[in-house]
Image (tube, rainbow, N blue to C red):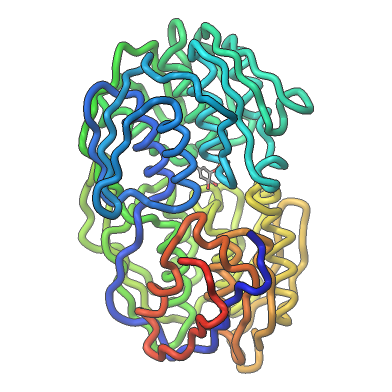
Length: 450
Ligand code: S3P
């Protein structure tokens, strides 16, 4: 995945301009496939993200007997097998790099009548799973894995579950979603209480599938459910993919970019609040609702952002945007401090360490903290000169550092770009359509479809 031959060189650009649309949301695409598979009847999905992570979820359900027909690009027809119609997978389910596949499947597989085993790539096998395993075991699940179920590979023996009331120690949509999926099968009521609302796509989509789910503030409850009803879903554009274009346009002089049909669920749009606080020019236009999710167009113009202090609570709805925010901070006027974000150390990479290393390689003054980072930014000429950085196989680091190239003085080469396909196939070509000076992006070192 992390291949030095696969690199991109991005030079300073004269701006990002025009109109662009993002591919479908990654989180919602996973959930559309999962819920469509256990629904009754046909579910038709439009604008599904066909990224490597999502294909892991799709393959898992195909191997558990669900008939999933890929029509034209981004369109799926899922012949749901009902809550009790999945069949035991013939082999270990490989979740690849996808934390969402692994954690949501842990919840869904625990109450089945068959046994299963989950594994993943080297990065996923290092990511914590006990946060899901522990409450599932309290519900009656039978799960074993190394270090008490902390790490994949993990084996699940189907069991009868009972609902619990659970306060999550970390606000995590993956933990909440795993428990809600298990809760569809568990006796009585399953209640998840969070300290702060994590992304709520599972809850919204369960409603679209006609499930009775109660959300009161940060308390979410489901009961043992008879059935989910197949439906039609249009997946909104991924805000986390749009984030790279938003930050690129905000930082690059001469930019004015309209990003169409983006999901603007408030549990995801923390970057907009942070940008506004930094004095950047960003507006959401034409708000509407699609498949239970808020959608809008986002207009960004280049501006002169100022450094700021970002708390853990402000970062949660921008958790996947940390790499892009670090790039923004490097080219903002003054110091930016991010704290209360220790979760970033257990993402696809340790994103605090990886971003600190990448920015230092470009000559930026950065101080790493156990739960955050301090970045000294400047818009002065000569700052963010450029250089060579490494993606560490992390798709979001790779794309954030590509954007850093646009805002740099002399260009940035990012090595290990094939990982971009994990969440954003087509990223390079799409970015190129928006930069006014096409030769600012040199794709001759790229061999992936990203
Ligand atoms: C996701 C939830 C978040 C996010 C991840 C996708 C999801 O993870 O970082 O990229 O689809 O539920 P956590 O639940 O670990 O915060």
